[in-house]
Length: 70
Image (cartoon, rainbow, N blue to C red; front, side, top):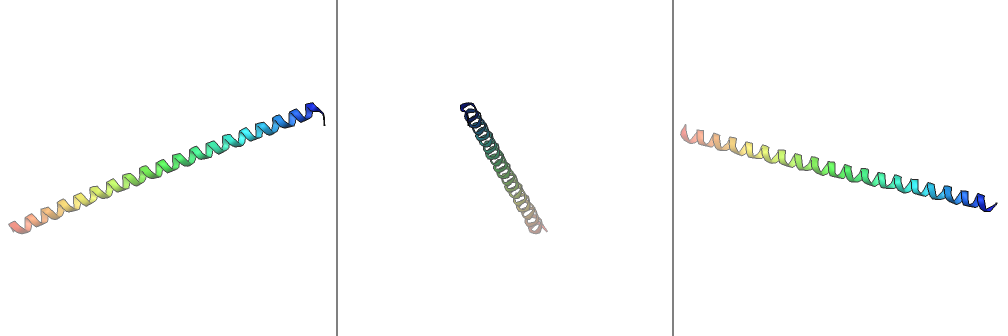
């Protein structure tokens, strides 16, 4: 194999490695985005649950007040 062919082969290997690194970076970025989305969804669910609990407590208080009056 000539020096030229060896140089070409090394260049190809280098390009392949760079592509793999880019793919890995893309995968890592995608995973991070998915994790962030999941965290946001969990936070939203928790907020909704808290709001529901507050509404239930308010409703109970209204019912208790009615019972005391009635």
